[in-house]
Length: 255
Image (cartoon, rainbow, N blue to C red; front, side, top):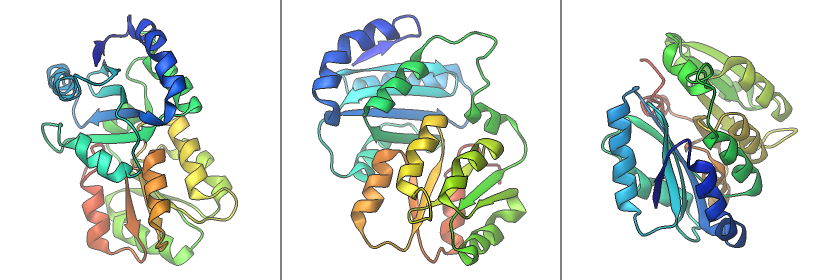
């Protein structure tokens, strides 16, 4: 594991490229966002992760005072929920949001952009940091079931503004419009389904906090959603206490 910086990222990626291309299913992209901007705290998290995975191929970089990106070869995993929990054990507290997804060609392209040096004037303008800075919470619910949208909206509306989408083809545009602190996303929707929509959202915002909602008893769908970048899941019908528990896990939400 190499602790890289914005100036050496490109060279390290070039070194890792042959292994990534030959064993793409064995590589993972990990993004960690902290609840506070603290360079020393984030640097400490970087060192803890680097020590935990010192024998693994990969790189880890502190992108900003609240953003860590890690590219690591952990091998083949069929359960990304379990992998996510294993990674979270190496964080010092619960004040961070961690997402892990399987490497893919679009993901590699996005990673190159994510790790590229940024113009100093543009630093801090990410969707995540915008959510951290604003005082208002914004919630987005994407589900074709109007009753379910109302159920979740009723539980969260006193804590912020709610945006809704009832069709899969509306989700990405609505997300870009409102930049929500959290997205409740149904797996089965008309138009583009939830699993495919995850790719669109993560490509637009790697730090999105996505909660998959579904009555689907097929475990593979939930595992696939987390593998693609969803943060967690919520079963239908959603209970208010479960919804509030999830809100408490979102670093950018102010309750």
